[in-house]
Length: 259
Image (cartoon, rainbow, N blue to C red; front, top):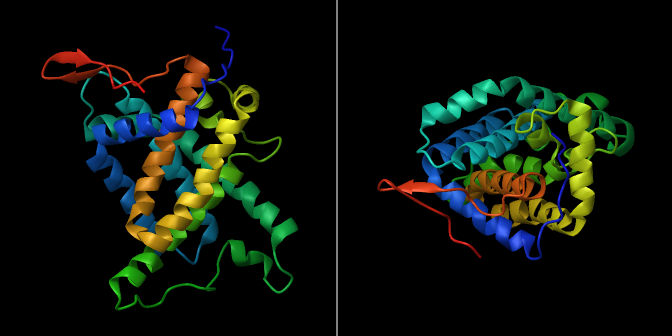
């Protein structure tokens, strides 16, 4: 089977965002619960930046797979989601490790300030929170700022030249392509839809910042949302499926609302 990336129709970002919100609504409780738990783990492991980065990547990739599982007509349970995540646990671990390690090496070689030791990417006490603030809003910001910072950097990790492309992970897990083939196909789809993909990247950067400043508890929701946006974009570009699939309601199958 030959897969040819398509060019998304105009208004892709608005459409992908709307359809992603519908997918989140289908399984909001357990989806958000998993990601919220991961964000709390990231706060607990704030002294281990590399591990935190791998966890952030793993949860983002898991959000893409959850969106794909929810985009089915049958009802999805927590056991269905966990089964799918277990089936792709190896791919999640490999992608998270490769990107996190590559990002760490880029930081050590090119970006680290001279006064910062090279091992800070593995262990650091810099800016770590010892005691939560008595102010609940400040405390929420202290908890979720690490997850927001990691989410803001994810887009760059998904676009390391010669190593990763934005749609590479879903091409590997959902299309069954090898790593390098998925990279090339993902890069082709990205180039053909560069304005939309760059707009998604801008959301990766701006939305975490706004969430931390205005309502930090939204950070876990952003993982769900951006993962779902990535899946919806992948679905339209590589599968030619523009709308969410049929949903069973009261024994009747109905389509998701169209733009």
